[in-house]
Length: 315
Image 1 (cartoon, rainbow, N blue to C red):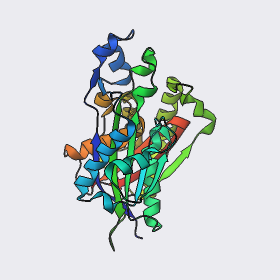
Image 2: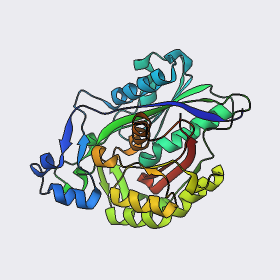
Image 3: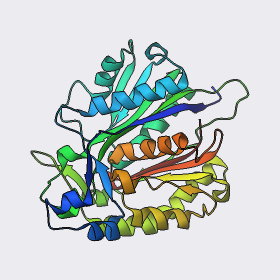
């Protein structure tokens, strides 16, 4: 195979919007406190009757429609999530059932905030190896379900949502649309971001994550560009994990992508974990801020202190 490409993207967010003013009525915080520290103004929150697989299926259906494909055209479903409460059936199987996809390979990928870029690389590898023809790659998380809403250090950060991409093989002579992945982790710092306990709760060491992301990740992200043979100056957009505006802006600047649109969806969506990158990318495409064929750096980082990034061409 010559490689793979993203044929289309789609996203979905629950209707309920939680503002900073709403949060100020729940915990000791304020709009100014939240904006100045993380840059978030609103986030979308799913209801008790909106499970993760429903969010994922909505985003996937939009991506399929945008690609002009039917569920029967898909033979691999990958769902990146860290908020699946049940162990089996997995989210990928549930999404496949909701969409009516016949006999796909169905796998979940739990690399928390870097889950989507790991899953995208896995789909690219499967297509290159001839193990799949077309894949649905979905990032979906319901962070509200694993959040302590009395803890102002974490509840102000999170949101719910999903984003999806259709990945398919490139045609003969067509340049690959998904570049080589650069991925890794810092296992000895995996305690810095956690979702654990019974019931599971999200917790993090914010300052440790901030220092690591702003100092250690820029050269890694630049290496992802080098592997793809793309100069950061030629990037049309940079879509980083939407964790915190104070991390996103300096990280994008240090990568050297001075001509690129920088996704800042965190301001209206909060930290949606594995959903954040496909959600932000889909919005850039929908808004016409990037064009078909544009080079875009996707770079996920966070839980497990894992990271994964690749340069892709916009659908």
